[in-house]
Image (cartoon, rainbow over all chains, first blue to last red; front, side, top):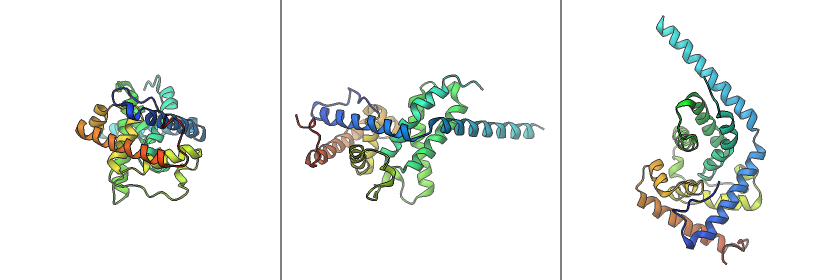
Length: 64
Length: 165
């Protein structure tokens, strides 16, 4: 987060939008520092590979 | 299966997507579960996804709502979280970040969803597509949300000096 889009940004809320966007950007940085992204990436790709293997096995079984 | 670009996309977008769902009122655990589920689906369809960021935002949001409906009596998109004080889901964040997150998470459900998506960079038209609501309704929710946020921030003793020039 987060550059607020110009279309919806109205002058009366300009300061509010900029302030909240800045805080959310900092919050995202904070969260990133507390998440082991590489471990999550490995977990996701391993899980995706496992389900793909299961699908392949099921497909082969169904074909037979 | 080729997944050129997926690793970089994951590194750039994972935390952002988790934060979006936290702003929507999810616990950190539920947010991470939904984003992981969406990322697994993204990996498997990677070559056919044309706009990965938008795809992830939509899929993670809908996954969160689906999971929440299966686990709780009150769907997240209709319930306002009643966070403990201090809210364990927000303790990782700095004090001012927590304050803004609490204000966003405390909005009425429809306003909260619209505000979360708006501050993630979506237009009112894009939010209307994702939520299935008319654009006019989205704009109305957004205006009410910003009025509430502005009032809460400016009435707070910790108000930021930049808000009232």
